[in-house]
Image (cartoon, rainbow, N blue to C red; front, side):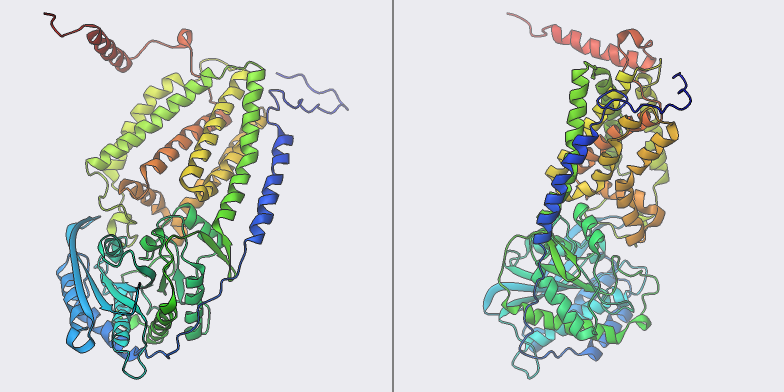
Length: 623
């Protein structure tokens, strides 16, 4: 226990570079200047994209006909869940609305079978109506026909399907007065399983003969709702659609509705780049480098199926957005095919280039990286051994990899909902029904694994200051490795890592502070993961189901194995820091400190020794 400070004398601050103050604050603050430089560079990348010109011919979107079509589809086939009888009937109904002898459109069908989460293996159908043009490039206007089967689906998406039919009719006969015309080929695509991760769009992009000639995509989804008009631009990868296409969509919608459409704000767009995710069908096209936008009244999440009756349709809004889609298609007629895409973030009518944002995020990591390397050098200068800390981190990492392996085995055994590696519709039952028995069993197995691992991680004696600093140093070095891996996979995902690394860096600096202060600092570093979970809970209306939903995305394979492993490594490092903050950290014991092996460890050792002994014996007879 430290001696009391004499009255009238101030407590001396620990010497910089000592074990009581191991983090080099000066180096950290000096390296922050790099962020100012990258911020200035970012400011010079801000531009205002200009929309494409309005089409020469006025639009002729028939609102009353579109409303009648939506009513007819909703009345005849209220249940259009993929694979159902209603889904097949809706496909035939769509074909009947565009007879080739009347409109001259070439109709093609594409069908395939696929496993869907909660539905099993079903047959899906896409239908394309092609209006040929002079240019080899193609504009795709699309809408999904299906719904989740729990409501009539008048807005989602009979409204988009009805508008798609009206647009196909208007572009099918350009010689008729008032009809719009386009020099490019236009594909009017009616997709299936749009509510189940945009599978119809994925199939079209993978199999269509037009897939390499697509210049732009306009998706119509729930355009007859009571809410304000909005556009969705997120993709399945950290890319963004062409700014000129987005600016044109905004301009055409504003001309019809009188107000600019809503879109996700600055931080929402950053989250969508850091964790690419969307419930709309523009996502696969944006990921493929094709400019694509969704016009909707649904916001981040399509409207709920319950109560989605024809009486709730807003005919005025449907007509406005249908006309906007028609005008937007005409504006894109002269758009040239530009393969590849970049990343942008929209801010008040201007765009900030994604590479500049990535540079800022990376420079925000540099102070942490330099400080951690300096901390490692301090340990080397003071000859502080890191082997025990490395062993403790290895045990934690093996435990979390074990949990990940068990989770994967459960997936292979069918314990989690199965399906394609696509976003699961939050409206479906599997998105909110936690498989309680499987999760409990996973927790029990993980608990047994932890009981084995913690035997080497329990505190057996008072640890020295050197060992405490070594534990923090190794964990912070592991977090640096995690951050570098994140940069290699998706630099935008540093958004979830930077709060942790820049806050937890100071845990060694306050290790002699009271436990509540250390724990509070550790909890503050969890802001990044909480940001991701909170985004799903609030933006997509998942609430307390958000953690399970993220696990479900891992289970169906939407989250890549690389991302899953990186998350497990980061969790192991965070657990070592948490143990230090709580005063429960202990280095991996050496041979003299280890207790007797339990029956399980003894069994493992016996098996290992037996295998090694067999390898020493050559079973091949000599002749």
